[in-house]
Length: 225
Image 1: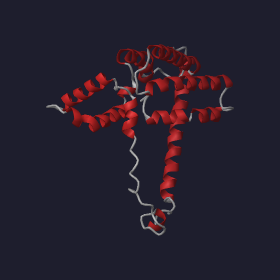
Image 2 (image 1 turned 60 degrees about the vertical axis):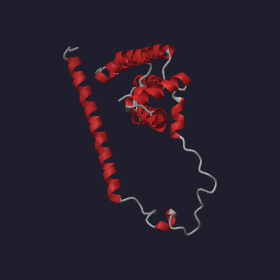
Image 3 (image 1 turned 135 degrees about the vertical axis):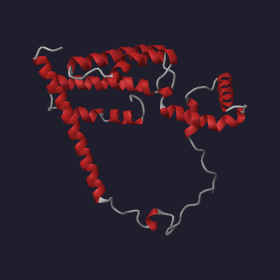
Image 4 (image 1 turned 45 degrees about the horizontal axis):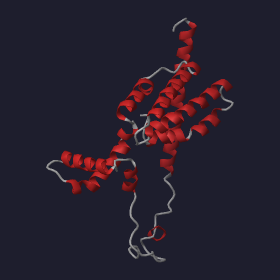
């Protein structure tokens, strides 16, 4: 769950989250939180890159992951080291050292390569689809084209020939403003439901956080580890 579009969208809001917490938590915790996001920004970029990661970057990733987990445990001791954090700290660097990348094996990267294969498989036919894939990879390796730059070409469309698309005239029923229904406001019930569900989700997250901290403080007060 550390890779993918959803993870990146969360990371994009880190500055807004840090500003929101300013003044609501002690300054040392606020600074620790900002430092965690800074470290995570470097980790996330390496994890999500659909390309082979160089050895020096893997070493830096291992150092950043260690600092990330240590800072989290030191500043927020009530946060448990989950299996995900364990994977980030121990297994992700080892995986990159052995296989070269994590992002290359993510769903988006795999789908991109699948599309590239579909576009070119007809040139390298074999008795089986696995054989066709092997022929394609072998040909790319010989031509030294087996790089993530090929994926960029997969997602681009060639421009249409001149005159292939005709400009839509005023009054054309294909235009949204003449079809009707395009400017209708959003259903009020649907908007209210989305707001209500969002507030319920936020409240449940805060309540779970409160319970976690209270449990931790009770354990510490009783002399527990």
